[in-house]
Length: 140
Image (tube, rainbow, N blue to C red; front, side, top):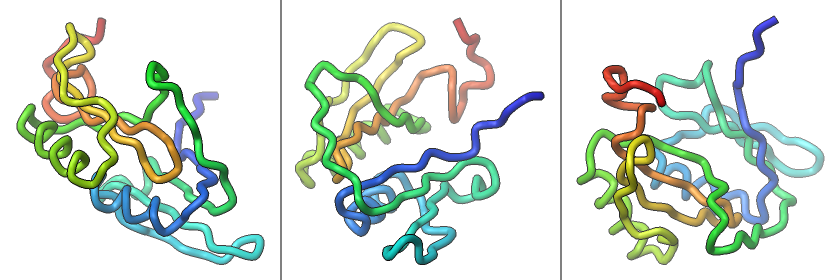
């Protein structure tokens, strides 16, 4: 048996705000919506990855109050440092930037962090041995 990670399911306090956040900052799109337990359930995925990995977003969650030094997060890779800077600038303007762009030793790389409307942290990175351009990088 070899399990495959296919999705993460999140209960959130404001479904529409989270859908807008993941659409705007993560380029995810709604691939499925349905009624569920008196509300609606939304599936979101990155284009081209609809059959590999999705976020299932449902209403009814509490706002997460993560500590400033809590690095629990969802990680998204970008193709350049400039793209990290662009996301950080958009997030600062929207009031959801929590970690300004910073450089860390390999394998962490260059990254910034945002807070989604449910309180989850979302990292955008470049230079990790994951994501765009990572095929040539060794995983430590």
